[in-house]
Each structure stands twice: as C-alpha cells, then as structure tokens.
Image 1: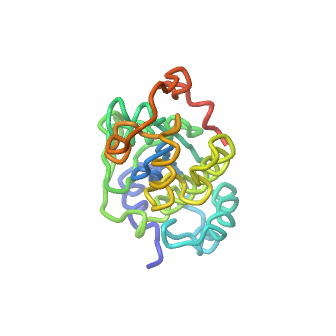
Image 2 (image 1 turned 90 degrees about the vertical axis):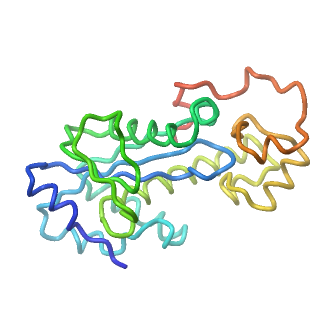
Length: 227
C-alpha cells in the first residue's frame, strides 16, 4: 500500500498548518536505545507525492532502499527531529513511557512550531498539542512513513557503530533484536552496558557479576547516541 497525505490534509483543513508525523524504531530490541523521529512535510507542495513516491513504512523496505530515501526525506521535509531514550531509561520507567519520551524529544528537536501530531498507535499526553493516533499510520500516512525511515536508519547506524565498541554481540547484524545469535552471545559474554537489564532475556540468563555500574548509560545524557 502506498501512503498518502489524506490524514495530514484533514488536520491542515482544521487549521493545523504544520503537522508532524511520528514513529519509533527499536521498541522491541533487547539492547540499545529506542529511537523516534518526527517529520513535517510541505503539504501544499504540488510535487510532494512525486518526490517521495518511494517512501513506505520502513519495515517494507530493504536497508539499502531506506538509506537511499533518507537524504530525499531530509531535503523535502520542512523539519526533521530525532529523539531517543537510553537503555537505562527503558529499565527505569518501562518501554512504553520511554517510547513516548523519545517521541516527545523528537518533536522538541523540530525547527519551528508544530500545530498537530500524527502518530502510529501512540498518544503523547506529555505534549499539549492536537494529535491523532492511528493504527498502521506508518503504512497509510506519508509523514509517519517518512518518520519510520528516519528513525530506523538513524538507529541502525548507531547499532552498527556500537558493534565496534561492544564486539562479539553482533549488533551490526541484528541491531539489538532477539535473534538466536544474540541470545548465544549473551550466554557467552553476559550483558553489555547497552543491554536492557529489566527485560526477561537478560534476567533469565546467568549473568556475569561485578558489572561496573559506572559504564552503564545514565538517563538524560543523550549525546553519546548521536550519529
């Protein structure tokens, strides 16, 4: 299915001139931060659908195609914001609040004022803005599909970079998700400082003792995850 801007135009017709589509990446991963992106598209641009004709939900695209589309999205969009919540934040407050935190940070990272939000499934009570939460918005809504690509590509690049800092886990391959290779690496090496320690796979393993707590990511310090 090809996404369009019908939902964005409904919000625009209601007087919301700048609509941000929002989506996340990494919510179900065992390791690494959860990322979110917010994308504001120029809805009055006549050639918008043509310029972003290949944009789809990131899960429907290959890694190569996502990488190719990211520059086009950034060039066409009026604004792009990225936010994230660190593994320690996921452990402290839970994945759903951490995901909302990442989304709120993505909105805060946008240039200029935003009038309304269009979000895949989630609502953000933390933000006092009109918002529509739609099932499968990343499939149907162009701005949300664009945000899904931005979030996915940015997070994947981070996990590839973190693979060098934490070798042996295969982060470059599985991006922190729960594959057989990842489980075997955990059993062999124990958790790394970027694993979500509150998650069942980590709790079920016999973990190495005396992990240096000073190496664990600290809530609120996001600069280490900028790619």
